[in-house]
Image (cartoon, rainbow, N blue to C red; front, side, top):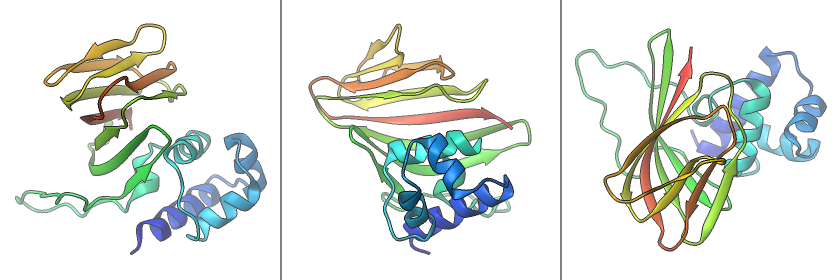
Length: 185
């Protein structure tokens, strides 16, 4: 299924399960009702910022909106080909969902992250007990809580509490990293 259609179906299903109207979700997410309607119909590509806002309103991890849950493979490996997962772009960064794992206590979502050179994104606080972990592959990334971002280069790793506003900034060169979002189940 086309990623934009899958996102639309996931949005509509999550909104319906929670008994929320289009108007209420749109208002809480700070987007237009027509925009949400087009997203749910699979007629519009969402931005990363819009999907994060919607996931927050719906009380979901971002990955629940991006893709169907992968089928478990008995004893096999999951090989994700480059550009095989849904990629979502924002004004400063692009993410591609690689995998998600849920053991009933914790949900992990693993993303490829690309932050464009000279850009900064400030993420609003996530739900309680959400942790972000990043491993930088290329470039320089200022990231972490907005009140105390750290500077990371290739090979560096950071883990931080994502329940406060936090930043992703690539001051000079484009940056690539692996992002792991850890949610309580």
